[in-house]
Length: 230
Image 1 (spheres, rainbow, N blue to C red):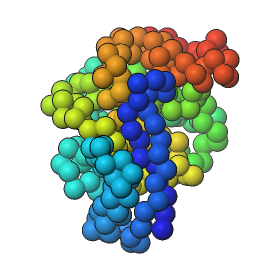
Image 2: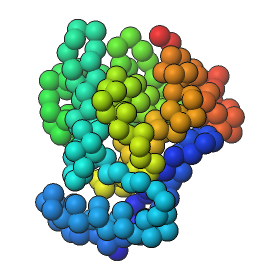
Image 3: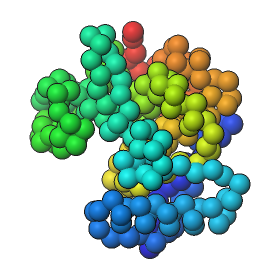
Image 4: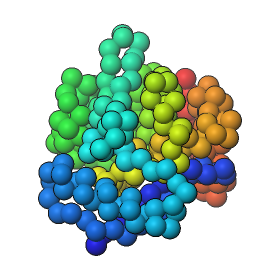
């Protein structure tokens, strides 16, 4: 047995719920085994939440929409009209004590970029730098969620389908090992859309912080410490 979070939509900050769900984990790295685990995870979740429509978001999803929404496949276009996956853009934005951002990662596959040894050998992560913008590390999931949601908003053919779901999983995400999750970002996108807040957070990065992270900002008194500019 294993436990993984299922992220559902919410009408209040932080605009997602995280529901830990126990399921039968199928060992192995093959896509068949991963899909067995996904099926078990969804089955166990729906036993208690049978009114939810759940979507696996990863390259292992049986649903084509879930595969396309994977950070490995969701593409962001920048000013030079080149396109990069969200995963590659995220990894190439990291700035460490002793190096970065490693822009050459933009020319690598998502898996190559994610496993580049410099990401572990360059000291502590300091901040993210994407385009002309700097993103501090606090709140911890801010840059990833901002990047994913802004990218998704540029793909109406995908987002128009996504909003029909209200629960999301990522079989590869282990909260004991990782901070950021595409399933969480998807739940956040749908919640913001359904609450009429999506346009506001897309237009203004400070609005994104104030609306999504208002609880954490007030609790930790970090709002004035954030270095944000366009």
